[in-house]
Length: 191
Image (cartoon, rainbow, N blue to C red):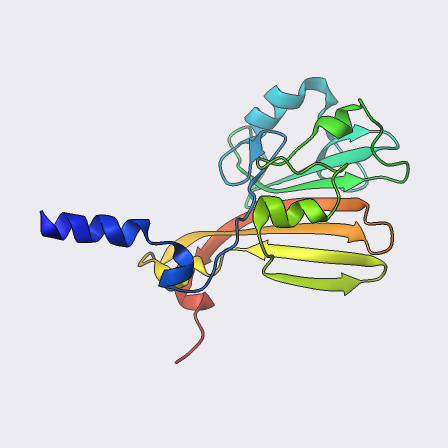
């Protein structure tokens, strides 16, 4: 019984005590989850609105002048209905999101919308892994490579979330989530 109690205590100790802090990393936008949802799921969710963008060569849903939602799938052959979504990108376009439009309703799994301010990031996700500037944008990156420091798993899914906003106006411009197979041995720094 004591062995099982010790295991339970170890499982309930917050990750910040056990090692490096791992921020919450989003993996869902508009009900589609990277690494789990498939092309079939995306087609079922968006129906005839889902297109293959001729310029980008990516699956997309567009609300002209307001926002675009792009989906990238597993590589390694033709895209089929059971291919998993590996990247989702929600872009704010020139005119921005209008109240009551479909774009104003699209949210991440934790509730972040293009109509939110960057202040919502701290409340929803905690501190980002890094923040940097690019042109007139500020970019917050959340990633989970710290998971390897605490788990005995050799392979896991490396998740990333990037949120970009205009530095001056604080208007969100881009929310993207992605997943890829990770190998803890490749992420650990040499001793």
